[in-house]
Amino acid sequence: MSNRDTLFLLPRKELGNWKFDAEVVEVFPDMIQRSIPGYSNLISMIGLLSRHCVQSNSLIYDLGCALGAAVVSIQKNIKVIGCKIIAVDNSSSMTNRCRHYMNSFNFNTPVEVLTMDACQVPIHNASLVLLNFTLQFIPIDNRQRLLDSIWNGMNPKGVLVLSEKLSFSDQEIESLFLKTHYDFKRDNGYSALEIQQKSKMLNSVMITETLDVHKKRLEKSGFQNYELWFQSINFGSLLAFKRNLN
Image 1: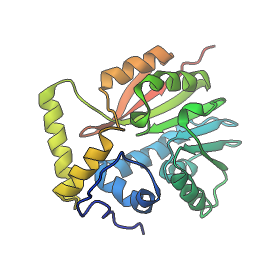
Image 2: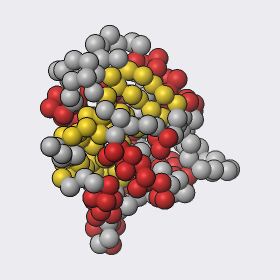
Image 3: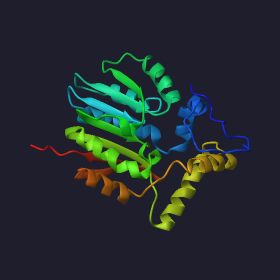
Image 4: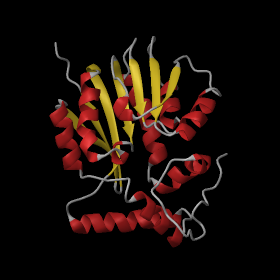
């Protein structure tokens, strides 16, 4: 049972930039469930997807793995042999807890948990790569290089899952979705003060983009087949496929 997120229940005199530190890690499962609409469904669907996308004797990468929820979902569903999951996060607090979490399971597919920048991970022999709400925290100038690296290290018929909080060029839609997301958090027990303080801390480190920008970046990397397969309010997930080059 995860701890209840009450980190911002009281006013804070100073609000720095958001960090996935030990304090956040303690309440992260509760925080993400109450903040991202449809998160549990997305994690479950990633597991189902892995049944059809993971190739035998290949690697699966989760870049920005947090505590490993998607990793466990994939482990439960892999139907082929000889695979390994590389779980990466740049927060040592996350990876320390993730390793402990992974040790509580006894799945056939091994997991290696690494503490490093997703942009520095060498990708090779990949049949499935996850960027689950990760790209939005990476500097915009580095995003194309990361996707290029993923495409270059991906096997033919490999799949990228790119999940992000989205922005919208139509201001009426943007406004409606922001209001609806705000209501979602309020209905999940967050106060106006909690929402305001978190938003202020996140604004300088989480830069969202439109679906069109994401698609253009994927295409520039070499992905020619991509589709939005999940959306809940202003959170969405794209699938991008690397064509068989033969």
